[in-house]
Image (cartoon, rainbow, N blue to C red; front, side):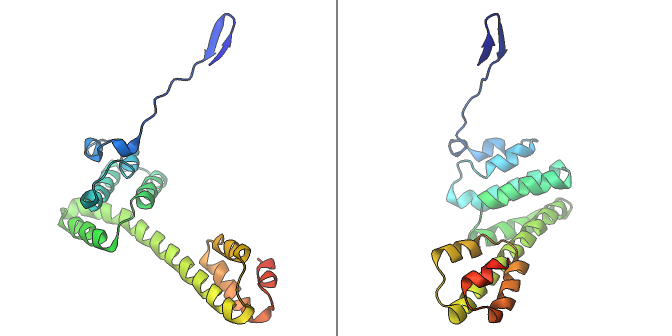
Length: 178
């Protein structure tokens, strides 16, 4: 609280909410985009995880948000509700069961997830290649070198380091040019 002797200027009033104690089903039909983002962190039974992701996707698609907000909210859902391979199979079969006119906007959102997954996969692959090549050419990397390589999140930059591998003698020399 911020106050002067004769005036309360600012009074903070808030309530703590523990999302993991809230049932996601209570928010399934909300028309609030924040509900879709927060549902991914609520209390979810293991068997319900693919269905929660489907409902979040349905909500995002039906709200017709601007592209930036759609990416933000779908990114939160995708980040906090990562499905196993088995759960993803269920998710995809349930998505196929959705009526075509409702499915298309949902597929547009999932295409962004797929593209994000491809980019993440390319980065992981390039990191692995760089570390394997470096191990053979430059010896075992230190923990600091590994941390520096793990901090690089662009596949192109990692691939460039792989290309320069034959031109350097040490990990430090390789990473000093980044």
